[in-house]
Image 1 (cartoon, rainbow, N blue to C red):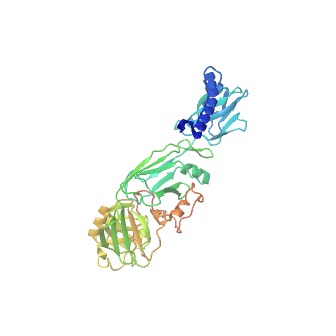
Image 2: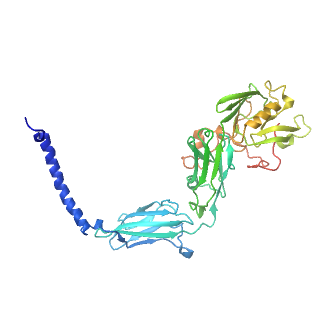
Image 3: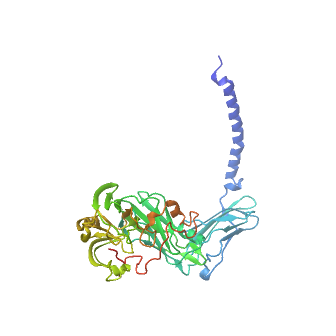
Length: 435
């Protein structure tokens, strides 16, 4: 019986091992030679004869509007170029066909410190290295962004807003801006996107509502980033928000009942009245804008002349605003007999004083208030509060400069101009009030 080491398979493996050993031996000799200077790649890199050039301005700083250029001479070639700013951002670039030059293909940032590391190889294969640092000139006028709403705790329907200090219309410039606006949440929200409402205003929302009890962080990385022409981004403060429970109030104008949900659980059903014919309440999802314990509601603020059959001037309590044009959820003790049976208001959702106070105490800005089965129009997306959730996700994505949509996507519904008396933030002057 032959021994296992004498099998044909063993003899084949042994021949292969010997062959490999013969291949390794010369390599080992070569490595020994490297240590003694025989292999140029083993030598320490020398200071390369690389010339890093760029356009300079006053004070010897680089002009960010000019490309960064690297060149070598005396038969050397460039093997690698790494250019980063102090924040760790890389500059894209490309080498020439003969590897003797490199040029940046992306704009430099303004007012930023750069470090450029150039690796080379001379005609004999010896490696070289050169490190150059420089600063770019500051932008004359920066593009700044103000995030909203104010820091605090909001409902899960609260969109994020970004208002720019200067208009940006060109799609490439919009993409540069949008690509440096960052939104994250813990727990993680569904995929989200920015929507360009106009040249200076963006809204951000996830595909579905924010998670309950989440922390949302919004920040800008635009500092020094080239936007368009001579316009560069400036540094701006980040924003941190929190969400509470998922609060949803659904009003059925067909049955005159409001169903109040907390994290998906129905906790209260209340009889209500909504807009009568000619003053029908808007359908759709609205977001709580603010709360006022007392409001003196006057019909003149919505264009109803004093003395007409529809005029009013009444004290209203526990008023929760959901549109800038004056739609509230509020106490309406004068219509208790109709609540749960008929729609008799001028557009607001009216309820008993007890229910209105309870509602007032259980909602916060950003909570969701939806109306269904009304004869009124659909809540518009941007011009009357936050109707962002009434737009389909596919349509919403078209408003992004990064997702292939048009420079300024049209919303799903026709929108009227914003009332000149309605400010975008918390105003001190008189606003429309629908009873």
